[in-house]
Image 1: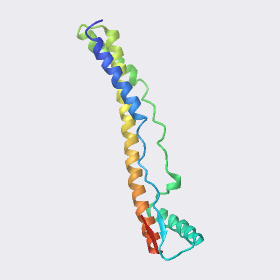
Image 2: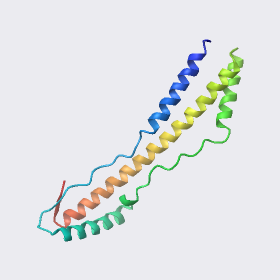
Image 3: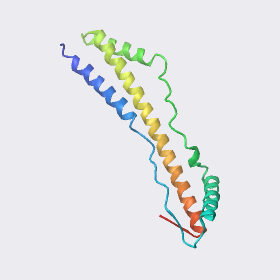
Image 4: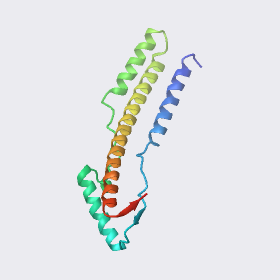
Length: 153
């Protein structure tokens, strides 16, 4: 084995970890609140109030928990990103008197890792926005239900 093999292995491990952890990210969700009819409302009245408060909170916040978007399919890497990475790695390796094939592999792997990291960041940003929107919806729904005489916990 050559001295540069560990760097290619390290990049392979980094890519593997990036791909595995990207699949673990998910939107933070909270359980529905417990609703107690503090003024003795019937189950039928509670259902009616929940439906009306759902619509009001949706209209106030622009967020519909029934229509939560899942993470969109990641955009493919730009054409040639891996090829540019491979060419750059090969060029650097040949300048440094190393095997250009190993440099090309390392460069392509680095480009793939960078692409996956960008996808992960975009998914995390979308999850943060959805969590903020859901928080606003939850506060509006709670305010509506409490205004109708229910206790929410």
